[in-house]
Image (cartoon, rainbow, N blue to C red; front, top):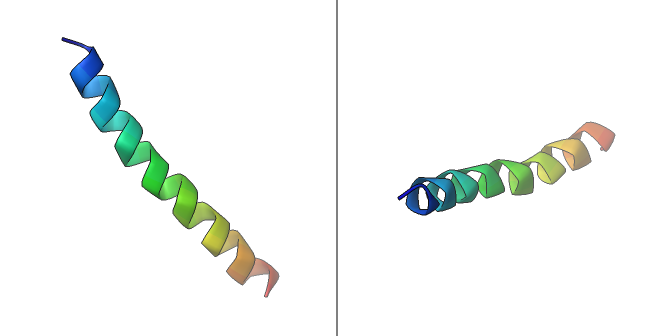
Length: 29
């Protein structure tokens, strides 16, 4: 069942991507 682990890792990768934009915005500020 690789689909299970893949979905779990995908969700973990999504949060960092959403936090990245905030970090970039602070860098510009």
